[in-house]
Length: 549
Image 1: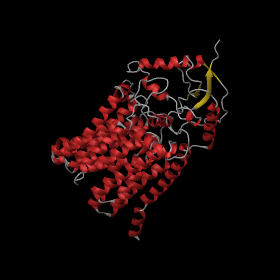
Image 2: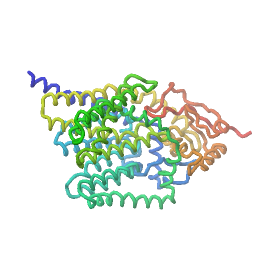
Image 3: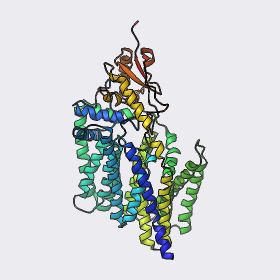
């Protein structure tokens, strides 16, 4: 009877995982075919692929016809190539992104199995990662480069430490490919190289660096030369001209992570205390554990009591994140100061986590930084979760450990299932009808149409895709490299460059109200066609040039 009960408890993570995956699959099935923006930048990303198909440059002097996003061209290029065969559509581009998500999840299974032999906990890692879908801004299936970036980065991380011939070279090439999706991938070259140097010496680290840096560097030189110098300006100078909002980092970042992964955060903090406490030779065990616990408790209280407009689960999750961070960081610092020589796995894990947190903090603090910046953090934490649970099962080999680890895994997955709101993230028939109405309203307009809130709508009406507002906003900072070019947009508005403009629920500005008047606009339900995540502005009215007096 007792053995039967343990077996049933051990099945709880699988049951929770099946329930979560079924809901995710149903959600993706509703989202993938939707022909309009689920997040307002999707159509603008398709416009990049469209330009590549037309043989037009992406990184150009900004103007009324086009301003690029601040991303490398990898994702847009792949979608453009596939679109030449299958047609350039929302479903195609979303399937590319979702495929990247599955590839990143498969790297978790592979990594946990290779290090521990536990397929069960590898699967737990993958499901926990997929369960962070809403917490990451629902970006895992969006027409954005994030999912492909993470796919290449994930496999670079797990392959880099393989002892097989060619694994290090493959990891370097994968990281270079990740760089072409999002240049943030370059930051992870350092922890990978450090771990290889620590374990195998400088030759192995240099080999990895060579295969990562040379392809990425050559491609950067080519893109910089081919764009007349615009490429690096868009990727580096434009973002660094934006202000920072540091409250998003502290306490914001830890509350976001804690709300998504509270059980996981607490588990990793507990592991750090137990692991390091046994290895601090010159410190009594009660101190080696008490000090990190006390630090974690203080920070948990700090995270819980800070005011926030949405208390409850948000504060609950934050307390776990602050406790795990405080206890884990204190344990790690003590270990480095007075502990044994760290293993290469410990060095690798710590270096990756620190790099991931720093990168997420910088991107989240960036004005406009959204929840997608946590994607690589969630992946790393899911990997650590699977490794820790598998290690406890292997080392302790007790019935209560099986029960405890099963309950931890099931609780975390169950938490994520409870926070998944399919209705909130799914498009509706009213959204589709509203989009179709705007398409029909501009179909007979003779001339270009500006649709800055939904850049792909003009394409359905037989026109070129529109300039996107976020790309214009990226330039509109006084110390930015292209700030003077914003005047070209204001001039284009004043001179009636566009035959019509689909203005948004948040008015465009840039002199539009002075130069254009409201025309006949589709009568659509309130809130229809609004993005399901991110900035909620949506197409709302059609304006046309004012008649000349």
